[in-house]
Image 1 (cartoon, helix red, strand yellow):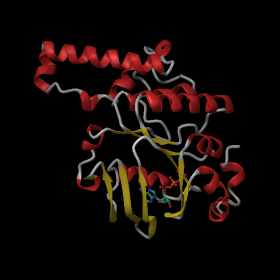
Image 2 (image 1 turned 60 degrees about the vertical axis):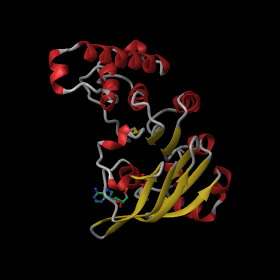
Image 3 (image 1 turned 30 degrees about the vertical axis):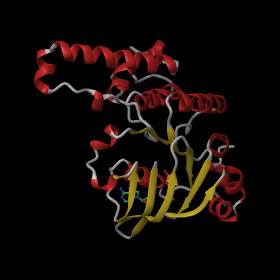
Image 4 (image 1 turned 180 degrees about the horizontal axis):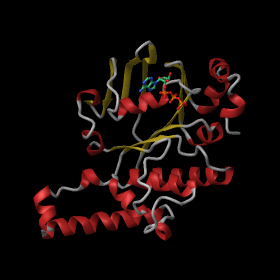
Length: 257
Ligand SMILES: Nc1ncnc2c1ncn2[C@@H]1O[C@H](COP(=O)(O)OP(=O)(O)OP(=O)(O)O)[C@@H](O)[C@H]1O
């Protein structure tokens, strides 16, 4: 489904990604790990066209993403969540979720302004979809509540709901369990596993919480200083000397164990 080939991104003197390559098959859940500054978010930003790579390619179902404008990404079925939540504090939970469906709305400026019947039908459909996603993620009770003031664990689920309403086939999760307590992490892992099947998703997840990554992912790719230093099944990557060395000194605070 996705083929990352020889991807290189430089910021001035810093090489954030240095010839990184790996593939992701449809239906897989791949964990992207590595110490702070390894290049994980930069890689996500290349997949969603926020950054232009200096070299390399990203092929998604046969299309080279690097040739497309950023706004085309959602329409291809790629959605992401953000490490620090990208929600609008004053908008209700439902409206925050609906923001994730913007590329599905077909109505133009004029027909929307005139509120033609087709526009009203489209709005009804999107609202019904939003309500279904909210219900599925146990958010129906806070649908009308502004995002501000809600517990962090709830906001993380709102962020996931907003990605899901875009009907993605490839879901990119940036530190989805960061800041959650142990019980919330376990619950999120269970929800994600179920949703992955229900929505037929392929998932790439960046996460420092090793228990979560190793327990939920089929395969792990580990970056360090912009390079891929290991790739394989969780049990193999966990034992990889290069991975252990990369995490030495930071393992205690980052492992989230
Ligand atoms: N827009 C930018 N301008 C300059 N340098 C950047 C930019 N974005 C990332 N970097 C640098 O690129 C390197 C990789 O950063 P990146 O955020 O991708 O790492 P990461 O693995 O996601 O780290 P973390 O786990 O802390 O989120 C770092 O040295 C970072 O400082």
